Length: 366
Figure 1 (cartoon, rainbow, N blue to C red):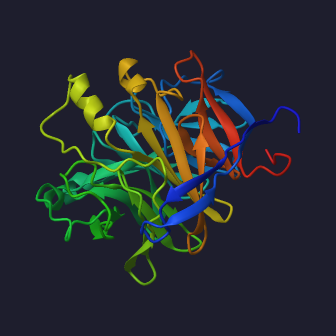
Figure 2 (tube, rainbow, N blue to C red):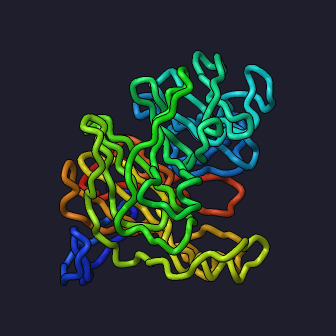
């Protein structure tokens, strides 16, 4: 096929297993292929950055996200790159002051969590219709830039900070179900058996809600074990403890603030891997991590490939069998029509997203 750039990936010997034990295991790394891309904001509104965790409607070809720098929630076309803001900035009835999370109910209705106002804003028919009290009323901190809607509740990752700050990981819960119309929040899930117990830092997960399996898959921010909370039977299980070859295990404890201290920040940053995203792709579950390198700090937060290594593992559903590793050329934002959305040309004047396939076998469906 014309215009396809293949990244051929070799075989590696890895000391790991799907159950977390240390045994010799040979694994194939997966090929990826670039099959297209778009430039964002050439028409319509202008974004300053794109964050991971885009909520995508395959049917509409639209991605929803939040731009934290300019404090706007937006939608963008994945066919033209056109951007439109969802609400004006402000504290009035139809305005948003600090949108931090997008929740897609369906193709015409969204919920937007405004961190500054501590409200869940109901977005329908192109405008904010109602606002409801949100998470601060329930003594939890919201994590992740997207959440999920299920049976009248918003599902999100949380920092259960009272228990976490006391290092009480037995009773801390990583997931929240917020019934915003009734003002009721229920905590669910359990901590991973392999999450580090060094300190309270990064003790929250990145999540994905699989509607078909009615299961929330999640991996803690600096961990590798995939946990599954099964909504139907209200149980949490360890789904897979495969450890990627490039994953860094934390060894340095956070002591005080690193704000303004580049050396302290680099020491901590080079000591860990961070989960970037979890998504479903066809009949596989993907988990993507990133490793900061010295160039990231030398260049004041440059996310270009080389300064940051992006890698992941894909597992066969429903049992998360057959883990296969892959590497990516940039930041992972989500999936669209079973293609990966990857940032390209970080630092350029234009924001660009490339469409990539894993295990590329034929023509694109885009």
